[in-house]
Length: 144
Image 1 (tube, rainbow, N blue to C red):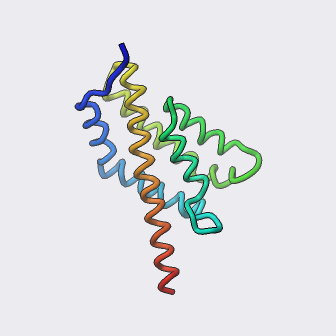
Image 2 (image 1 turned 180 degrees about the vertical axis):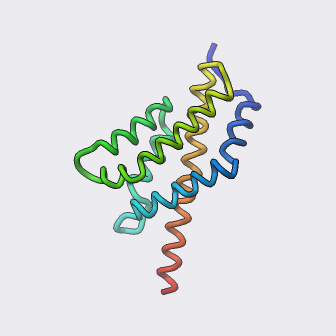
């Protein structure tokens, strides 16, 4: 039998993501990602931010998201310096998601699904804050 997330577990997870502390941390990280990666040369969303979002959405294991961040931080070329600036905070926030899933259910199958649910909700908040910071910068520049 495969694990299923109950409505109660989903509600508890979403409630956790919506706490002032958790949501505030995601928003702060989104702004930090904008400050660190900015936008690409055409003013579009940074490839690095899109890659993080895509990884969280398409991952089949929560650890894939963590491994992606560690991999980006460890590269010898490309934006590894920028990833090193933000990677530790991303990993800390992911660890909080892991801990929350562990606290919400003892069933290992549910934990795995809950971690992914939390990661996807978290990345939506982070990317939303990144996009808002990007829009604010663009509005400032158009009024200057």
